[in-house]
Length: 240
Ligand code: ADP
Ligand code: MG
Image (tube, rainbow, N blue to C red; front, side, top):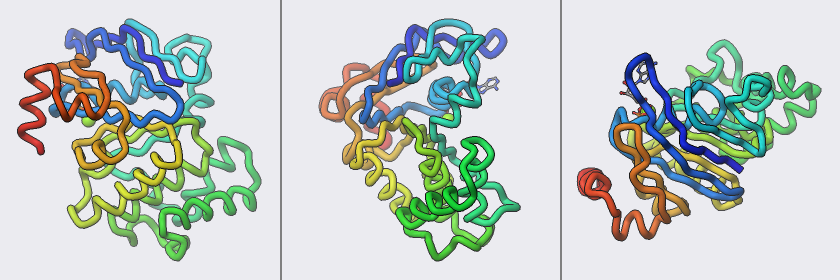
């Protein structure tokens, strides 16, 4: 469903991604880990066209992300993305956060959009919060609303960029539990995270990056059992 081939990217003179290749099949849950600054966010953002690149190809569901003719807003509407910092619309209620993209981007009527939004809000356990504003919710609740909002758009895949790293420890699990449920339901997911417990529970693939390169791309069992690179071994020794 997602293919990244020989991808390289520079910020000016600085090469942030070097010859990265990997792919995600339908239903795969790929965890991407690696030290800070290794290029994880940049890599995942190329998938929905949030980061342009100079070399290689990124293909999503048969559409070439970097091709000039590609309709990036249309592509982005089909890929859910959840960031570190929630990024809800602060001036809109939870319910309006859930419906805005559906009505504006997908052209759904408000009744249908509301029904779908509330279905997913219930799924993340927050139906009772629909009239609140983001600043009236905890960080964990905001992130669950962000996930429900993304799901309301019927995405073909979900991208997560460190979705729990800005959360207080007691809220991490409520977000991870939602993500585990999604994974178990067969959602195709690319997840940048340091939560190796999550990786062990639901990942079927683990990618390890360092200095803009993919050093490991293997099954969860291979990664946690016997990482091939010294850098991945060091990384695991430090965070587990
Ligand atoms: P990670 O998500 O693994 O922490 P990033 O993809 O955010 O890494 O960043 C990789 C490298 O690219 C870092 O060295 C970072 O400083 C650099 N970088 C990220 N964004 C920019 C930018 N807009 N301009 C220049 N350098 C950037
Ligand atoms: Mg990052």
